[in-house]
Image (tube, rainbow, N blue to C red; front, side, top):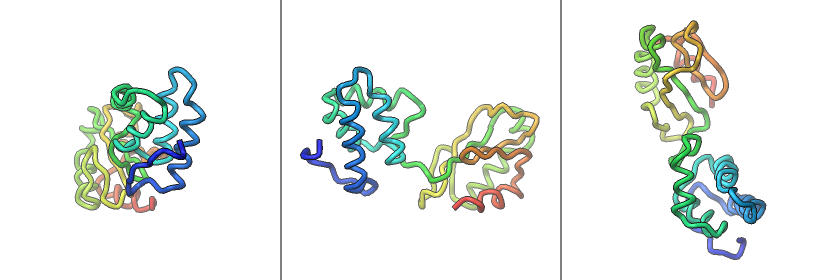
Length: 164
């Protein structure tokens, strides 16, 4: 793939394209390998822009509809940029009753970050999830892999400021 024309994309450098080429070469002749190719490419770029999906399609010799179909079917894949730190806020009943909405509003007020969005500087992404399985700690928030219980609107900014 190194000789094929690489699309221009602000988030993908020449070195990243080289890594993508290695991923495609490694999996190209393996049937059913679209998921691992997309997963590895997303780990490198941190999301799957349309230019990358087209490049993978050409490199794997697969229809774009197949690559795009897999990328949009599984919730693990993202077609939009993600932040360096992923915030998951529980919006389930226990967390809702104990004030997670105020916490979400404080995050929005401080970082201009809505559920399902990413900050302009790509520091944070935030998603609302129905349950994190820690109702006894409600309201609950997870940042990357760190779990925070009893998160209040007053505490949330202090917690998030630890993450650059």
